[in-house]
Every structure is written in C-alpha cells, then in structure tokens.
Amino acid sequence: MIVTEIVPVDKRRSKVILDDDFTLVLYRGELKRYFIEEGSEITEEVYGEIVKEILYKRARERVLFLLKSSDKTEQELRRKLKEGFYPQEVIDYAIHFLKEHRFINDQEYAKRYVEFNSRKKSERQIEYELKRKGLDKEIIGDILKEQPVDEAAIVRDYIRKKRLNPEQMDAREKSKVMASLGRKGFSYEAVSRVLGEIFVED
Image 1 (cartoon, rainbow, N blue to C red):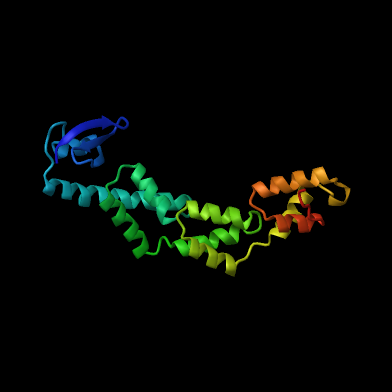
Image 2 (cartoon, one colour):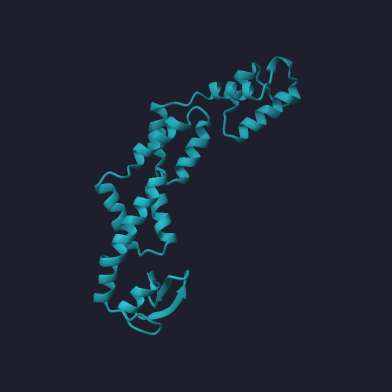
C-alpha cells in the first residue's frame, strides 16, 4: 500500500489516502511512529497493526460515546464510522462488538421508538423515519401491529391544542386542516372521522 496523499483534518489529525482507495485518519504522533509520509509504503503487517492496535479501540470508543447521548440503529452507527473514515473491517468489528455485548438491537430500538412516538406521530411518519434509520420493513410492520398508532386520538389532540372547533369550521377550513395533517402522514379516514365529515372532491 502506497501513501498517495496526507491531508490535515485538524491540528492533530490527518487523512492518510492509500493507492487502493483506503483512507485512514491518524494522529500526528501515529504518523511519526509508523514513518508514514507521502510516497511511503505501508506493509500489510504495519497496516494490520494500525487496524488492530489503534483503529479497533478507537472505533469501539467512538460508538460507545455515540450511544451515550441517544440510542442509535446499526445503520446510523455504521454511517457515523464511515464519515470518520474508518475502514470497513474496523466498522464491522465495532458493530460486532456492540451486538456481542448487547449494546444495540434494532428490533428493541424500533419498539422503543414506536412506543415513544405513537402518541404524537402518524403511523406513516414513524414507518418512514424507521426505514431511514435502516430498519427492515417487515420488522416495522410487525411492531406497529403489536403497538398500533391511534391516529384519531392524535388528531383530536392536535385540534384541541390548536383550539379548533370542527362544528364552527367551514369546508375550506376543514380541508386546510386535513391537508396539514395529511402532510404529517395521517390517514384521510382518521382525520375526516375526527372532523365528523368525509369530504369527497368533485
């Protein structure tokens, strides 16, 4: 592996770009320790030592730090490590470590997410957000069956907080409310049921 370029990230760290499209982020002291400079060669042995002795530990500490602030899915953690220029083998190691010690479990994460958000978000919005976080569609569907979202109750709460009175609203006002809630993912049926009237477009 030949070092094609060394690009400073900040005052202490630099990106080490290798000729086979690998990129490592190392501290200045580590560059000196392994005699890494532009044009130099990193042997497989040295690369293996950097991965096992430095990057494994650093990636492990990074994901544990990320989990301190809030729960995250496997995909979110993989993305964070990739953004930090960790090699794929290091990312896989860190995720395996978390799973082995039960620090992450996407299914349990999804259950907690649905439980926390089912009183304020629509089922469609919850499903969309969990998919973005890397959750499998079938897992999301099963959890939503176990913990269904009462969209009508959320719509009632929305109307109460907005101090709206459906009985005093004309068709235009109701349509505006329906459009607003529709953009939040609430079903037409749930909204119209709460408003007490189903509007059919001509």
